[in-house]
Amino acid sequence: MGGSLGMALKRADKALKVIGVGRNNGRLRKAKELGAADEVTTDFCGGVREADLVVVAVPVEKTVEIIKKTVKCLKKGAVVTDAGSVKGKLVKASERLMPEGVNFVGSHPMAGSEKTGIENAVKDLYRGSTCIVTKTGRTNKNAMESVKRMWKKAGARVLVKTPREHDRLVAEVSHLPHLLSFSMMSQIGKIEKKEKDLSKITAGAYRDMTRISASSPELWADIFYANREFIHVSASIFIRNLKKINEFLRKGDKENIIKEIKKANAVKKRIDARIPKSE
Image 1 (cartoon, rainbow, N blue to C red):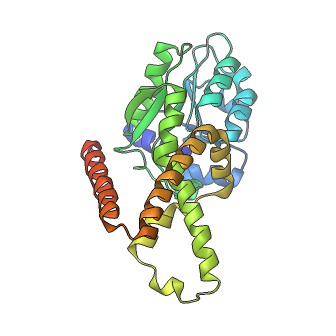
Image 2 (cartoon, rainbow, N blue to C red):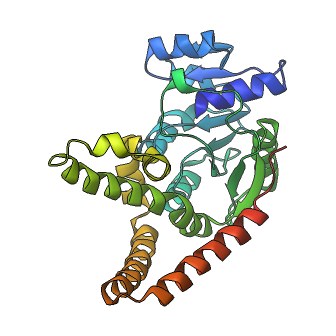
């Protein structure tokens, strides 16, 4: 995520200075080779000391830890944001850590893939995507505008939500689908142990439903845990709906099965029609 952002920003504005900060020298060198950063360093304080805008692009559970490590080094007027997919407690904790004259604004680009690491960074990752920027009672207007400008420069559209609104909505369209994909792969795995030919008959439906099950276990376990309140609600509703359709199957109620599929078709068509077209 961070590497792709660096590439996108450098493409949009060659005069912009991007400094990559991290722990792994090999990955940092790769980031510089790929054009994701002008300079790289393992010195967290040194890397952010003169920064106008700091983007913490690490797994959700590491974000506050990194902010604690660097916030004392930031100059007055600096803005801090993140790229994590859960916002509630993270935004609250991060805002509390900001010293006078430094502001935090949470953000979450709705882009990415099941692949991680700088070697999978792509300059067009954010082009045409939506980035949710969070607003609270403590959000500084100028800081928010700085974060919005950055994501727009990277090619994203910006949508403003409260942290709680963000977490509730993302549970439905991102977190629950990942949970279902992992669960489906678990089920297929049990069958595959007995049916060795199963892999020979996989096709489009299998690929469409299971691509994201290749995502990082550690990353997604942390996301599930951090947003467990809303994911639990979403999963409970899904289970009730699945049980209803399963009951129609048990009864051989074809008419109601058709109704459920037609309702799903209508929702798909309606939502797809509202999705902004890529620029």
